[in-house]
Image 1 (cartoon, one colour):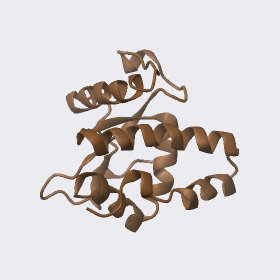
Image 2: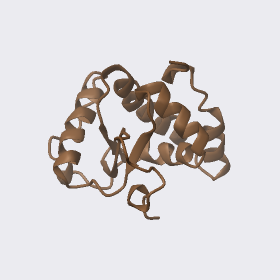
Image 3: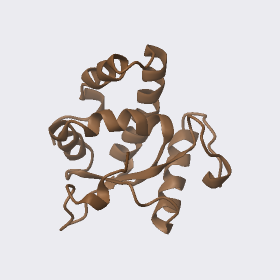
Length: 147
């Protein structure tokens, strides 16, 4: 199906984060967490709730629509949706369990109750990354995160 996550070049997005004033260590940590989520999505097809650091990296990828589409097709065969309105919903709760499972496989424990841990690097972000459903338009404002 073309590229896979391990073959995707994240270097332009890492550079953009550094150019925006983030430290190289912060950038690497953000992308390491994003890759945990993306690899699990590629291997399982599951939706994931984002965590703050990974979401920060993801927004640099989202800025390049073509790269975002290519990455979604590599993972799911369809574009991915970055749903900025899912936080606190049943769908988010299910996606959080997928995220917890992905990180647990790397020896990283995330809290069962994401509402109990707010504001940290690995706290739940207010977004969900999931495959696009038929008929959904990724350009629809409902899928855009407010600044």
